[in-house]
Image 1 (cartoon, rainbow, N blue to C red):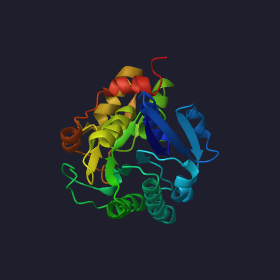
Image 2: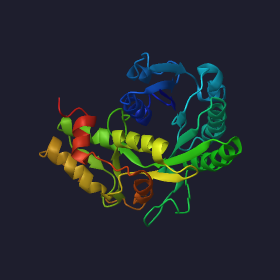
Image 3: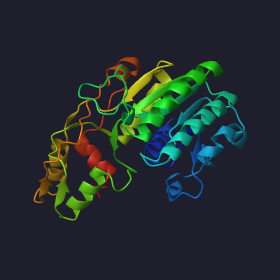
Image 4: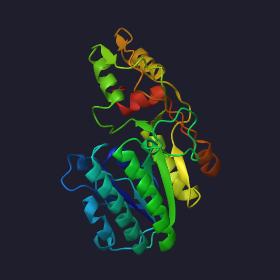
Length: 297
């Protein structure tokens, strides 16, 4: 039996990953969740899934709390707003604490999720070789955690991989983001307004496909490497919106703005993760909308 640890296991991507790991017959999962979070109801304990309540500041003691050797550590938990410097700074130390606990637990691999925010605004194709230029505390803290955890992992002798996650959508996505707001408006047959023209390129990846990507990194990714986790078939944001409108409520209006000065395009390459792991997304955007937002019910 393979033993996995997942921090942020009740979150958006974390819950999708936990559900994916439960599909593995030989998996035993320690699901680390924030104490008293309403999202914890998403995770059902069983003989193969043990819930471990812990704040991020407790992650340096996860070896004591779990108390048994494990194989792979997925670190997905993070906290604080994008511009909350103090909270973002604290995440860096918490990541190192999780890594050191993973080493003491005997984990042979530590997979941590980074973010597209590490790259900042990039006018061209974004590969793992693109020089990062974060423009917010969140992106800067992710980048700092990436660099420091990579060095610390080498010192500890644990295999380290970093997955930079781009725009996800689907099951467990938090309210207030663009796609859930669009779906809610269309289902209510209410008009939807976008501040930009929608001309910027975007890249949506279904969250369950992202969970598959993380498992692929655990099994086949090259230690010491950074990987983009995205769909790789970027297109104008307006195309996604119009596709959703056609499926949910074609009679509803979507108003586009003209304020494109502050928007930026996302054009990620996923050639590296496909080459090294043979992973590729399998969920069509419309299928993801229907499954992820309950449009089939």
